[in-house]
Length: 116
Image (cartoon, rainbow, N blue to C red; front, side):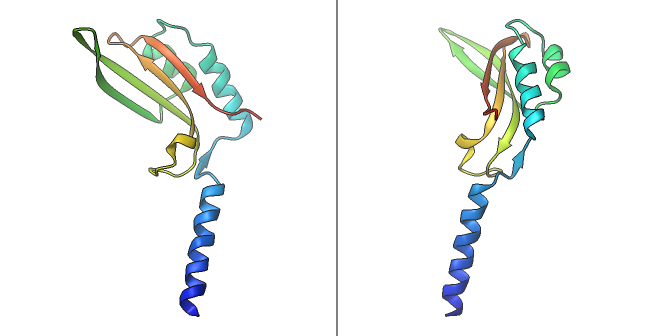
């Protein structure tokens, strides 16, 4: 009987953890972040991005192949909602992704944030 109760408690805890994000900006902060990100333009500098959005949650560099040439790309991620930190549910996270070229200039801005 104790095992059944323990299992039910673990299942209930798991269900509850999936229904509430581990991190979430308040609605006003999300709206401001989206507005600032939408104002960014191709060619803006890294400094312009960080002045507008602040320090990124994640800053990664990687190589991308374009034709015969490999170029370095920089990806900046600003989280608005994280459902399970470091978990497999990251496709439900809400974020703004800024892609920079090898000269640290904005290539693209992808906004994946739900506003209420």
